[in-house]
Amino acid sequence: MAKIDSLRRFLLPCFFPPTVTNATAASAVPKKRLSTSLRDDVETTTSTTANGDPTNDQDSAQDSPATTPDNVTPKFAATAAIAAPPRPSKTMVIGTIFGHRRGHVWFCVQHDRLRNKPFLLLEFPILTHQLVNEMRFGLVRIALECNRVELGLCPLRSIPIWAMSCNGRKLGFAAKKKAGDSVRSMLKTMQSTTVGAGVMPSGFGSGSEEVMYMRANYEHVVGSADSESFHLINPDECPGQELSIFLLRSRNG
Image (cartoon, rainbow, N blue to C red; front, top):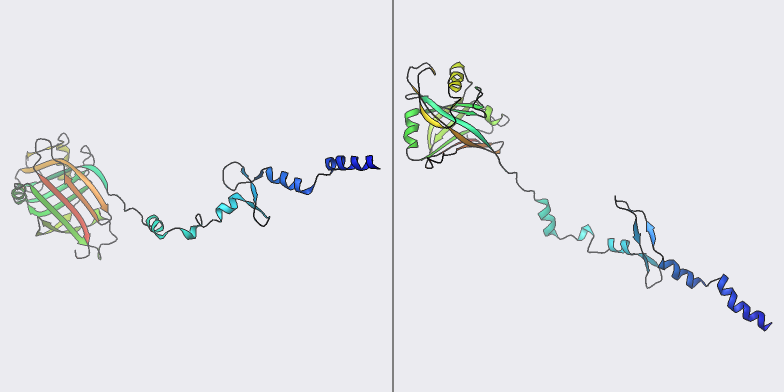
């Protein structure tokens, strides 16, 4: 009997291991859990709490106060909510100021000087010799304003009438025009001119006077749906002239 009892003590544990050993082996082997993201399966390990309950390391990390969205500080939340303002768009265009010596000034904008159809054509109430006198001081600011209440839904470059001021002085009203045969003929004559100023023979309009013109590159800035501007880009040999034309849709236009 003594031999049988000794054999039972040594052989039974080999076939029937104790439950504590099973729990230890199970905790040591990592198990896989399917991930809900596009990554591969995530290996997770379990640990035992003080009460003896198994816990998951990733679940405890997700439930920690530092990673919950409710505990995000208002400073960072406010910063994320504030969107950056849209940047104004800038393009290069060709602008031509022309008119009879004693007539009104016209302003023509083209994307391509080889095309006779202008992108924008405006007739200013200021006379040509008056604008020449203003440009002698080196700084010209022309502001064209319209009423936002009456023309709020109209595209800015489609507005027919503008209230015009030059260097702070109100001069009357500017008008949007369509290019007629005389304007197209003049633009065709100037196709070979990129930058410059001079006098052309008569043929534009009903007068018989010569036509004065000044063609240059302009920076076209679209600030918003209610503001656009054209800024003269001076050639290297003439850095002193500043000329800007603003299209503004205001509440008090």
